[in-house]
Image (cartoon, rainbow, N blue to C red; front, side, top):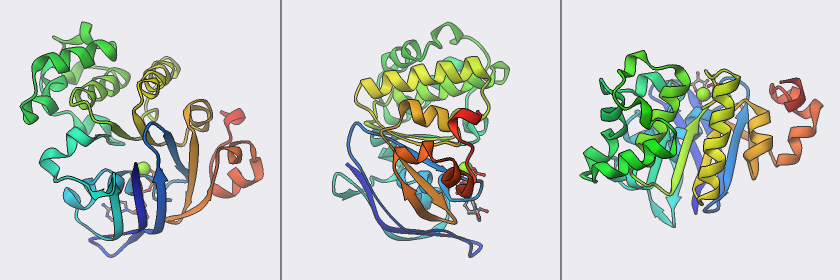
Length: 237
Ligand SMILES: Nc1ncnc2c1ncn2[C@@H]1O[C@H](COP(=O)(O)OP(=O)(O)OP(=O)(O)O)[C@@H](O)[C@H]1O
Ligand SMILES: [Mg+2]
C-alpha cells in the first residue's frame, strides 16, 4: 500500500503546489490523477515517487508511506517505485536503446537479462541497436517503461504517458498498461486523457488548485463536473 497523509508541497520559489492531500493506494490498483493544467498532478506524482524532495528541491509537509514506512533513499528507490516523467525525452540518458533499457538495472547492479526481458515485454527488443535520438515518441515511452520495469518495482508512477502519442501509440500504451495491471503492478497515472482512465483506472482523483476536488470513477460521466474541473470528458475525445 502506497499512501500519503496531509501531503503539502511548496516549491523553492515559494509556490504552494499541493495542500493537504490524503490518499490510500492499495497494492495492485490503478489510480488516475486528473485535473486541469497546473492543478498539481505532476507535483503529486513526483511527491508520491520520492523524486520530490529527494531530487527536486521543495518543502514537503505530511507523509508519504510505502507499506507503512518512509520511501527508500534515491539510490534504492528504483527497486520500489518506477517513475516516468512528463517530459519523457528529457529522461533519456543513453546513446543506444539497449543501453537505455539497461540503465536502471546497471545502476542497481542487477543482471542484463532483466533489461532484455523488459524490452521484450514492452515490444522494443527489435529496437535494441537503434540510437535513442532517432526513436519516435511512442518508442521512447515504451523504452523508458522497459528501463523502469527491468528493476521490477511493484509500483509505477507515470506522468501523462499518453501526452505525445498518436492514436496507434496510445493504443500500444493502453495494451502495455493493461498487461502491467494484470501482472499486479500498482499504477499511479497522472493523465488528462479521460478515455484512458475510463478504460484502465480503478479509481480517479481529481485535483484543483493543489487540493483533491473530488474522487471516484463515476465523475468521468459527469460532464458539468468535468467542465468545472477543466477536464475534457471521455466522449469528447
Ligand atoms: N519546479 C517548480 N517550481 C515552482 N513551481 C512549480 C514547479 N513545478 C510546478 N510548479 C507549479 O506548481 C503548480 C502545479 O504544477 P504541476 O506541474 O504539478 O501541475 P500539473 O497538473 O501537472 O500541470 P500540467 O497539466 O500542465 O502538467 C503550478 O502552479 C506550477 O506552476
Ligand atoms: Mg503535469
